[in-house]
Image 1 (tube, rainbow, N blue to C red):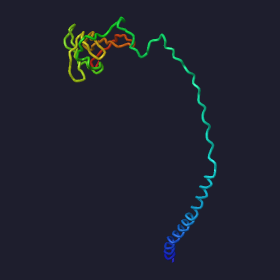
Image 2 (image 1 turned 60 degrees about the vertical axis):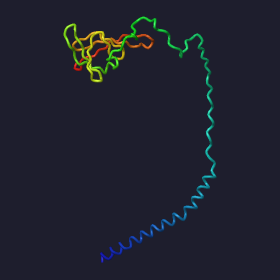
Image 3 (image 1 turned 30 degrees about the vertical axis):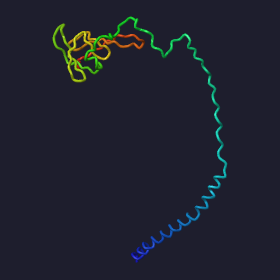
Image 4 (image 1 turned 120 degrees about the vertical axis):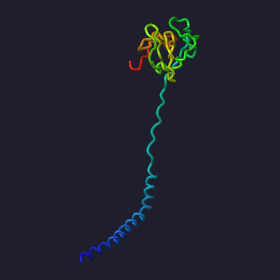
Length: 177
């Protein structure tokens, strides 16, 4: 008996679900077109929100630039060739190590002893150069002042931004120093 009841209830279940879903579908589709037209008519009949007022334009104070007696900012800078102090020599021929930034040069070691020490510097193109006091290297007119067993001391000429030049000390050391 219990098996029969279970079979009957399982057979009636899909039928009940089909009736339920069919009833829902009819009521929703039959009422939507009328409600939608009424809603759109109601919305269109309402007045729109008020517009914001146009903002007031600010009045700016005029400024008269009086440049009489002042140097023209677009003209060539003042002639500083007469200034004293160190200056790079434009007629000096450039040496091979002046084509590279100072921080890209690596000291590999030295040759010699005492006052006749020659520094060995490797450039970024993997070529080792011999350096003695008086040679130039780096892109800021760096002149070799002294070569020690562990370091090469250099003096660079750097522009001060006002047409003059400043001497700046620099050095290249062995990598483990």
